[in-house]
Amino acid sequence: MVLRIFGLSIAISILAMIVAFIYGGPEALFLVIILSILEISLSFDNAVINATVLQRMSEFWQKIFLTIGVIIAVFGMRLVFPLVIVWAASGLGPVAALDLALNPPADDAAYFTNGEPSYETILTDAHPQIAAFGGMFLLMLFLGFIFEEREITWLSWLEKPLARIGKLDQLSVVVAGIVLVLSGSFLAADDKVSTVMISGVLGMITYIAVNGLGELFNLPEEGEEEKTTKSGGPTEFAKATGKAGFFLFLYLEVLDASFSFDGVIGAFAITADPIIIALGLGFVGAMFVRSITVFLVRKGTLSDYVYLEHGAHWAIGALAVILMVSIGVHINEIITGLVGVFLIGAAFISSLIRNKRIANADPKLDENTPATV
Image (cartoon, rainbow, N blue to C red; front, side, top):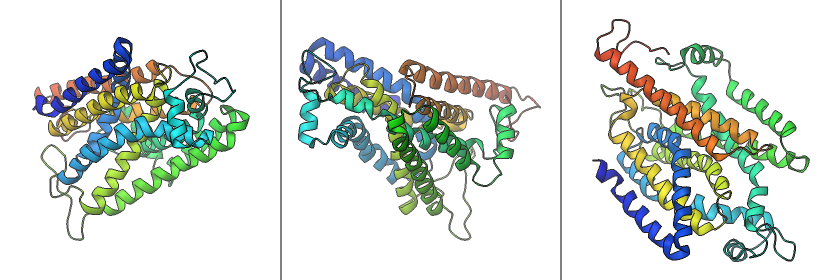
């Protein structure tokens, strides 16, 4: 099963590294390896969240996500997205933007001889509005999770009180709005305040619209109750099809885009070459993230290790805060990746402890009893 799930990713990764070596020699190969490690470490929480949504989708929509979704993730977000930003920010045409990316000046990595900013500079300057959009989208996702009452909690001392106050109507929007106002007022540069505010509001609107449409079309038909498996996951009968599957697919793509913002921007601290970035982040990193997602779904890992979803959402909350803070303060990408890995690792260890207690028939905890940490 492992070979079947990861086989394609391994094959594409080897091919991408060969292309990188032909394209730029050992240095390009080394950069691709570094970028792929960066992408996988930054996006492991993305894989866990993707799996929680993907397991609600029918087999057809799962295949769509793992085919068309991969194309969007690899080419759209890791190659075309940076070019579009440069195109929009500089006023250059798409061909000129690509030429700008592929032909930086030999004597000055920051500016051309005519004084026009380089590809890397333009993209870096656009970071505040990109971070505001992605940060607010992810923050809304995190708040929606922690403000909802759940039978099983991980950090119970914190999650239970938050769930109680989450009964206040539209509290997620209020909290996110306050965070956006504070970030725009105290972190954004004076000439970036309006764009940061607009981008943040668009991130909130995108989450509310896509998530709302997904929930609307995912309602069970009249007289039919959602069935669950013994492990708590949805059965094939209950999985989303048709419009519900489409909106879940759309939700996943926006979610993936929000997760990839920090990786794409962070990649420019390593190289400004869009080909190397696409090979490292897309053909290696994004492919492995997809394979990890499939592995989690096929193995039922989220049902076996019930705190993984909690850890991933807390990692999302941390990433959202990091993105908002990065509007005015640079934060090393290594810190971003380690925070997510630490939270998911802690959740995994907590799940192992819980499973061991259940296996030992601890009367204080069984499968139907909420666990506390």
